[in-house]
Length: 418
Ligand SMILES: Cc1cc2nc3c(=O)[nH]c(=O)nc-3n(C[C@H](O)[C@H](O)[C@H](O)COP(=O)(O)OP(=O)(O)OC[C@H]3O[C@@H](n4cnc5c(N)ncnc54)[C@H](O)[C@@H]3O)c2cc1C
Image (cartoon, rainbow, N blue to C red; front, side):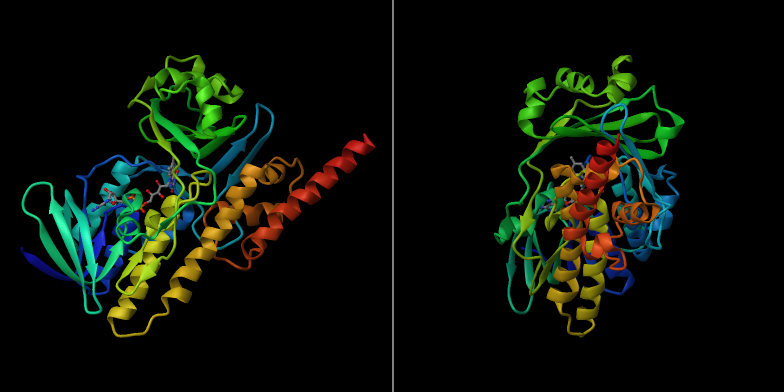
């Protein structure tokens, strides 16, 4: 069997893989990316956070993204019914950094990154799949199956697993574990949106239903991505086929959705799709000759659009550490990778948990918001989850429920006065 030698093999050309490969290549290592599919390919996750721009810039990929003129995203808004509403402008956040992001079809975004790393000199092979791995103290041997052609092997010093939902190394090395969150379902589609307003054009909007919530992400060319996420028992009251009929029924469950979408004859760009039980975790994030990045590590929930921010962050941090190791330096992966990444995951885990307990809604929809805590929470929503000057980062577990408790106390006191 043919054997090809490289310094680093990256599995998958999603945002985590492209960012990692770009940094390794920039640092002078011989890196090869194998990607199972042909790009452009569909993947969900269309709304970015400002923190992504920091990672793309670090990887030398930001200019290529900016040249695409994707739909700009200035912030996020939340609404519980027709009356309760809260908007965050990302330019008004606590932590210094980018104050906007983009919302775009991932097929185009991921292809932009992949084309740019190829332009920068990375060897990227499409329609080749990693099928098996063997690690020894000296090297990693990886079996590759091209869609067309014979199986071959790659001998690498190190493997970066950026295979996303493919979870290649967690599967092959039995590293996967269940998420602490209950299995929720996501049901989504792209529609031709004729009711888009100037105000909604630059925001990712979230509207709450009873035991679910829906995203509305305006993309280019008048197309909007809409998704329902929640408890499967709640969603399945509206059908079990996850088809256009069920989607239309769900659109009639929230006053904002009714106002926008039920009056028009919705035209679907593709038939609605469903993902059941999307959360997953891992027992370890690295080994002697490998590291897991992006969704290969842990995926919590789409509520705060944090997936690509984490994919690019893990890709960038892992690639910088690996470059140091390949240059002969001793790297403390536990401290510099797992602990660092785990901290960011834990901050978002608190926010996700408190969204589903309702504490976060108490904060979001409080009528009188202190501007300083709004900026601090805005920073977390923008993906700045490593800035320990922010109390909602440093003491996230305690700070979020405590603030909700204080607001509820004030609301009860005000109600008693009236
Ligand atoms: C319902 C839902 C909504 C979401 N919304 C958002 C959002 O609005 N914003 C956001 O930031 N995130 C969102 N996410 C999360 C987002 O989808 C992921 O976090 C992101 O795609 C992870 O990027 P990645 O690079 O790790 O993996 P991916 O983008 O999944 O890329 C992995 C690549 O690896 C390839 N691969 C897999 N197996 C193999 C193999 N054996 N050999 C070679 N290649 C392989 C795949 O073909 C794929 O191209 C959402 C997730 C869900 C479930």
